[in-house]
Length: 220
View 1 (cartoon, rainbow, N blue to C red):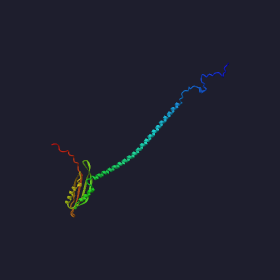
View 2 (cartoon, helix red, strand yellow):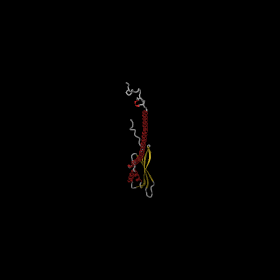
View 3 (tube, helix red, strand yellow):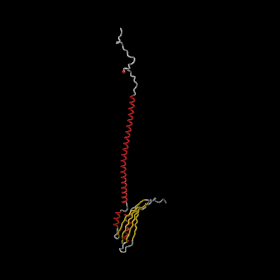
View 4 (cartoon, helix red, strand yellow):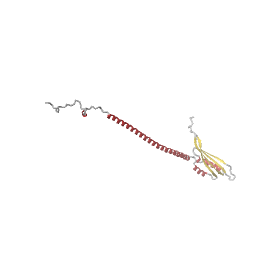
């Protein structure tokens, strides 16, 4: 009996049907699109990181420069204040030195005037008193010399001599480290009044420092 075509076993094709893509074997070549995209993305990220890094460095540098300029302005203000304070300190130091020099003088003006007035003999008259400081060089150092001038009238030369003796023994004029000298100048006696105009010049001058002793003499 003949086999009908419907009952005939259908054998598969010996090769896939290229019309049906789902039946084709997976023989595709490796695609490179995603690799190119990946590389492009990485390059973009690297470029972006580089740009951001440059921007950050630029910002940090600008901030550093701004901070340094601010510090410089503050330092300039501090330096100006320090210089002003230094000038004021030097001025004050000079004033203090002048005050120390004034108080260290062997002859203090107000004390001298007070005591010289109390020492005046009754027969002696003061017409002028002066105290003058001058700078001299002693032992290669600048020292202060004091010149006191007393002028007036006296009736008796004996009284003037006694007054000179009191001045030479006066503690105020015998300061340590100073030498004392008293010079006298007389004018002729006034025939009408019988008085002698006089001038006493008192000089206080620092003495030269004595060389140190070498010690006792050597062995005999």
